[in-house]
Image (cartoon, rainbow, N blue to C red):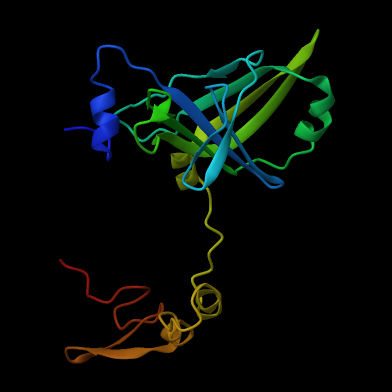
Length: 207
C-alpha cells in the first residue's frame, strides 16, 4: 500500500535514481511566502513557488513519524538572506499560522504530478541570526496535533452556533434544560441537582 494519492508520484519514488524538489508554504498575515528548492519558479494548484537563489541554502529538519500522537516539531532554515530584509521578517505576524511542506518529483524538467504534501503544522518561533554577508532565518513549526492542546474558545451556545451557521438551531433549547422536568418510569426526574434521589443522582444507590 502506498501513501501517495498520485500513482505517478508513487512510481517516481520507485526509480533507481530519484530526483525531488521540496516546496514550502508559510501563511503569514501579510501574505503567503512560497518557496521551492529547484532554483526556478514553479506553479501548481494555482500558486507560484519561488525558486531559491543558488546562494541561498534552505535546511529542513527530519520529518518524524511515530506511533503516538505527540506534536513533533519541524525546523526550517534559510541562509544568506540579505540583511535589508530582516526588518520586514521580524515584523511578520506568524505564531499559530499554517506552514506546509510538499515534495514533487521532476522528470525531464517537468513535475510528474502535483507535489505530495509531506507535513502540515503551525508556526511557533522565528529566530534570526546575523552573519557577515547575510543572515540566517530559522522557523520552528509544530505538528498540527498541537491544536488538540489548545482551547477552542467555543461557547456551545445558540448565539455562538448561529454565528457559525445562521440556520442551525441545534442549541436553541439549551437555555431551558436546567429547569426541564421529565418522567422516568413512575418517578419525576429533574436535570439539575434536585433529583428525587439526592444531589445529581437520577437513580437510588444500590445496596
